[in-house]
Length: 342
Image (cartoon, rainbow, N blue to C red; front, side, top):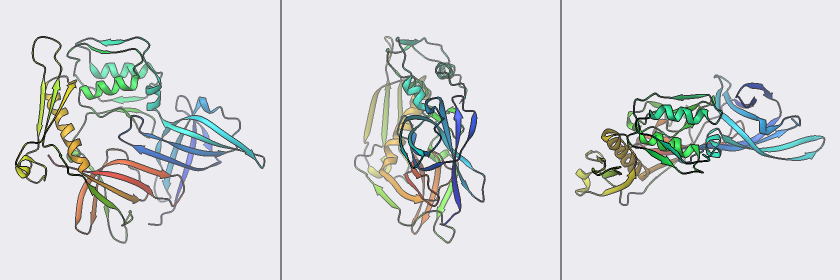
């Protein structure tokens, strides 16, 4: 498990352009959590650097195993730089937030209505551009808004963007290691590529004291989502069922339907409603098994799929949380959600 490695930090301007590498950073932490609207944040301790106006700069944090190329752990906004003076040097602890905070801080001043027929991904791009952020990669879609969608004054642009992404069954907005806003179609965990295998042995990259917990109470095997109608006709309905004989929660094995109903869902069409229902079913089934593990710091991201092989266990899981101490030799503390095949 002992791997030679280092962390370093680049100072960027507000356009994400490199200013210079900081030479006096020490200590820090980053937490990434897929279940939070602003997925990544942390703290960084900086010695010296008195000439920096932190509010007008960003930082990019890198990790490198000395036998590999470095990988970016993200571009972060800086806020609340508290500091103390001692022994002739300024010691600052700065708060870090990933760039989705820009979308969360920017709220619409008046109610916003998007008319039927508007291209959803084009509207998302316009909302991001309106915050002054041009770096984005939104997978183009032909889906249009089916009926007028309205948000009241004071709603964050992050909420509006994620509502629109959910409408066409995309992942929530996120920011990659280069500071690019990303919007991509949702894919089932079982259909995603396997990023890495963690296996016991002399080349193991994880500690063997990992734990697996299950909560199997009332796991649904059918999800129905109801889409509100804007007229006299009945609204759309999406349905997803777990009929997989290999799943312990399926109708085949339980012998009865356990149904979860969610109303007020927005969906572009019936296919999107069915896809959203399946996404909800997978989500409600998957928390039944979570893995807590410590492993070497590796170039992974939220929603990646990994495999763990240890003893009698051979399973795949989705990365949901990673906590790092920016200290060479420290381990990543991770939480993975086991993949359910439905």
